Each structure stands twice: as C-alpha cells, then as structure tokens.
Length: 132
Image (cartoon, rainbow, N blue to C red; front, side, top):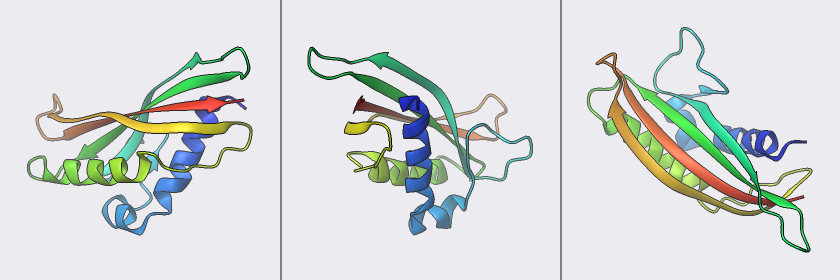
C-alpha cells in the first residue's frame, strides 16, 4: 500500500476515535469537501511523499495537509479544532499495516478568512517518516 494513503487512513481513524474532537466536528472528516458540507469540518488537502531511504532501510517522508472549515464568528472555532488536531497528531503512535511509523509531527498551522468573506479556513500540515 502507498504510505501516504495508509497514513491518511490511520489519521482518520485516530481523529474519529476522539470524543472531544467529535463534539466539535462530529464525523465530518472528509477526503475531499462534500458539496453541501456542514460546519465546522475537516478535509484532507495536499498530500506528498518523497524517498527517505538509507543504506539499510527503505522508507519515505509523507506530508499531509488538513483543512479546517468554520463559519463560527471570528477565528476561535477554527483554532479550537486546529488545537485538537495538533494535540491528537503530534507524536501520535499510529499503527500502519504495511509500514512502520518512525515520526509524526505537526509542522505548521494557520487560520485565514476565505475569499468568500464568511468562512474561516485553517490549515494544519503534518510530516511523517515511515519505513517499509
């Protein structure tokens, strides 16, 4: 299995299992944004994978972006969801079937007003190192 897809599946399962995050977004964690999404919600965005092999081990670096969408007044709701994502994902001991997770880190987070003028758009970037 491709490491990026395997990591994304593990992240989704990990996030859906958290009661505090579920109280905020329910089960609204999507691979791509549905047409009539409820708010707040989380979607996966840009995903990348690069070789990280050594002389002894085959592996890769995986980067995932999670997008937070909020229509709450101001940035508070978006940052609250982002805070949960950061807490749940930074150094999370996720289990992968075909790979071994070496490291998982949140590397970036921001919130900005979407061009529609109504929606707060948050981004969380996560980097992982995996071995085959």
